[in-house]
Image (tube, rainbow, N blue to C red; front, side, top):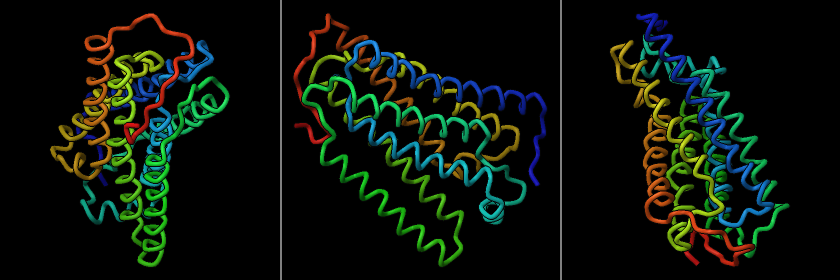
Length: 261
């Protein structure tokens, strides 16, 4: 079975992994705290939160299966080789578990705080419904074929699709409002740090193993980092360059959703 060739690289891998975990985990709190202080979720796009919950739920299923299931691990090694390390670490499981809980709590805040006339769009509801129906079909196929690695890859593909999709409603809302008020930039700065260190962790493992299977064997984690970095930079530009913070007007009334209404 695969093992580390360099102790310093193994230590660096663990350090980067837990820095990513801490950064990404803490990144949920600025938005939660901002909502609490304002007693309002106006400016936070609800589609973003709903799609994010689907993303993190599917990512948790993937990470937990890859990390704990011996059947999935056996099929992974048969496909990529016995010398390849499982591309999911303990910090990945810890992060996705925490992410599901905090995203669900943010949805709870949406249900109790002032939200103006904002609502979850029909498009977002349709996307989530189709996504879970699709993976349900995958479950039935996998049970029949005992294709457990393929099944968890379906959940991984879902989280990649949600990662690409979830940022768009918030970016569009910021553009249409010409403001980022109500959307925490602290969340974005920490998310960027998490994305960079997560990508660095994968690079360290690849260097140690002298193999890049780690990247395409866990394409979900690779794309998660790259897509997050891209949109984080976009949000940073919106917040600091395009739409500098102006004085907030109490209970603004507007409605922007994924359909651009």
